[in-house]
Image 1 (spheres, rainbow, N blue to C red):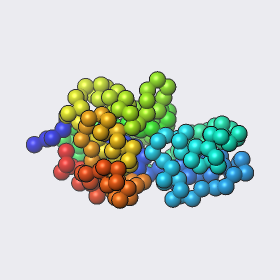
Image 2 (image 1 turned 135 degrees about the vertical axis):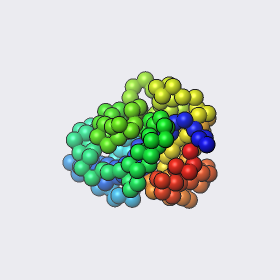
Image 3 (image 1 turned 30 degrees about the vertical axis):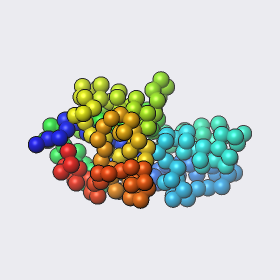
Length: 215
């Protein structure tokens, strides 16, 4: 028996492994400004709160750096062109989405990545499976505020009690809580189990196909 009617997914670290492309664009922008480059592990810890926050943490002294605005724009331009160079769905993700669709679940993506990139990646990878995708844009608060999730639920026509949120980070755990939704935390993303448990994660999926038993 179904617990839910809909599944709302985080994007980076949940459906797609985007870390290498994010690191490359971060380092392209930093390198052009003569700033120290960042390791993959550093970028892993920086992601989750949108690309502006990513660059605030990557640029020395963050927004206080007089070069910040220029470096941030360089990052955005580079990432817009190279957001799919190394990005790919995690193993078993496409099988999961196919089976969820076959079982009649509605699906959405909610991300702190900027809106255009979310739409492009949804269309490229998840066309035919996920019709609703919400990214960062003016006029709507990003996660962990509940606004983007609420927008996705409205588009799906589903109540929060009938949907589950799936994500990998402390931001996702807080988002689900703020939205009043159940949360499934995934083990293959950008955070360790220790970090996830510390953030309040309780229900875990070690493999994407585990989600089928949890929904």
